[in-house]
Length: 480
Ligand SMILES: *Cc1c(COP(=O)(O)O)cnc(C)c1O
Image (cartoon, rainbow, N blue to C red; front, side, top):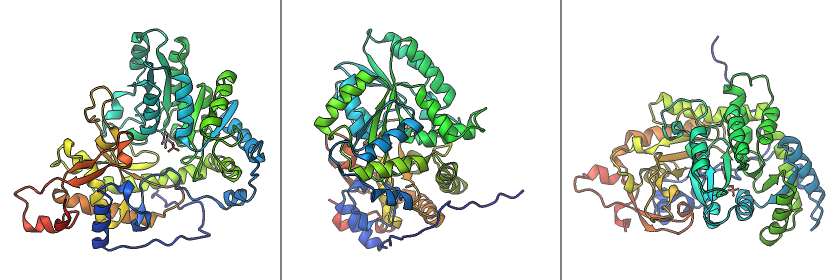
């Protein structure tokens, strides 16, 4: 049978017009932004694929929930609704809301990491690692080797390598492993899932050795969908059942509700240990707010509770991941090197292969984000050496094996026509790859440098001819 088309499982009730810009306007805008897409103004962006964080469209039911905000300082109804929903779908006993994911990471890192501790994880995540390091910890990567190879087709490239995990724990000084942070749908590996079987195995290894496991549940719902799709024996189970089992194998989670949970702001820490919950409630009042709102308005918690219920519906996840797949497949068909298999929340372009003439020291992924923006107004994000930052011991740049550009798809926001326009722009820029120049830092912040650093193009090579100069990312008189 021919493959039948699918469509978004919603219709559009309200629209937000997009502003179109000229190429000249975009050249000026990216120059003003120091060639960092985080520093662009949103009004200058046509299709915003910077992140899927906090960029979801809420449903009519969520908006109705916003009107039901109980803005009491203490004991808001919406807190109790959220607590009930988190217990039902994630299964943890105690909920501490936070303003977003990193608020929860801050609490967990502060409470569970002593200076000099090792913190294990399946590939780092930027804010997670920053909080671990600020608490005095050292991150140790125990992800499987396949995760570092953009061409490896394994279905669960987010998996922890069990032997790396055992070695890391067994060679650490006794009591110096703070915990394992087990990330779902590993973001920096290209949105690659972890298998249920791997979570079971990893949880056993840690339990026997007395090491706690905390889920980074930010993308656990989408991870559960991949388990249903790809893991033998899981196809008949619902997303909720799989999600509950994933969480049941761990001691707690941090969660950025700005992703799977379909809200524009919010997050939470959820744990099973009553003592840890008590300590977190103590700390949350210092940094976020009272333990029944954690930096959120009552209405935000209500929208989150409703969003969680919508997020585990199969129709929703299938269309969400399906849209990412649609864009990725278009690029694969056009011969563009991307991370495979296609991940859950975005398509990751292999910038090192698209721009082989740019040395890693000249940040090909950063250069590609700027070139894509200038071509079409599409905003993407660097996920390579700039994001990886510097080694805390040597202060040298870290060059991760993956040098990627992420086209992240917000949930329920864009149509497939937007995906077509995006694919065409990537194909156009890749076909003129040689015209893209490498970048160097003009300014570099100490923490999470990718957010605010500024760049300039490397000086043009002597061999650059006039036509090359004409289509450079920026006007030549403006190169500083
Ligand atoms: C976004 C994200 C975080 C941080 O959450 P914020 O809400 O942005 O603070 C942590 N872990 C993962 C995997 C994420 O994708």
